[in-house]
Amino acid sequence: MRLNNYISSSGLCSRRKADELIKNNKVKVNSKIADLGYQVSEGDIVEVDGTIIKPKEDKVYIALYKPVGITCTTEEHIEGNIVDYVNYKERIFPIGRLDKDSEGLILLTNDGDIVNRILREENHHEKEYIVTVDKPLDSKTLKQMSQGVRIYNPVKNTYTTTKPCKIHKISEKSFKIVLSQGLNRQIRRMCQHFGYKVRKLKRVRILNITLDGLSYGKWRFLNQAEVSSLKTKTDI
Image (cartoon, rainbow, N blue to C red; front, side, top):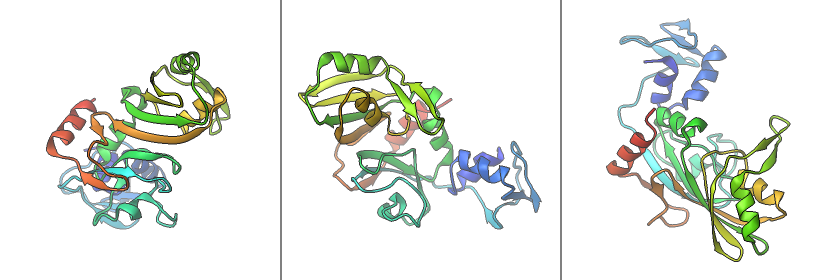
């Protein structure tokens, strides 16, 4: 098993974060600092910051109806972080993010491998949202929005054109949108481009998992059929 996968399978973090730990010389195998790409063999002892870790045999998959005000981070010093909110007995982490000002579905797990597969942009995994804005919508604007919007990327200090997406008008001031990418505050910035301000943003679906039957602020375990389907849809 690749070292980053071994670390993520322990429930410590995602594979991406594991790569960072390895690059920063935080990981040792058999008391020696390990390199990226190291293959862990049976009997190897893996340490992260001096703590021996092992893959978890039992995987946990949770669906949460995140309320407004909760931050999708594992940083314990941040008030209102999602890990403290769920208060699960074992270490879990969110798959991706959902803005603090937004509500809706987010998945949490200790399976670092599936985190990486869901978040990989080239896999085009769908996420569905219901958006309410501050003034009446028109069909022309929604059509233009669905074809791609040029928005500013503050991280890279460049402009990015969003990928084409599916949009369906629900009412005078609300619409449904299905995205296959996840730029930071993407929907809010898409709306802002056309002069709209988002009043409410709710994610209702990630791949095959929906909010159906889940109350605001509550969470549940995914059932076996959902987990199997999720793994099938993220298989690469």
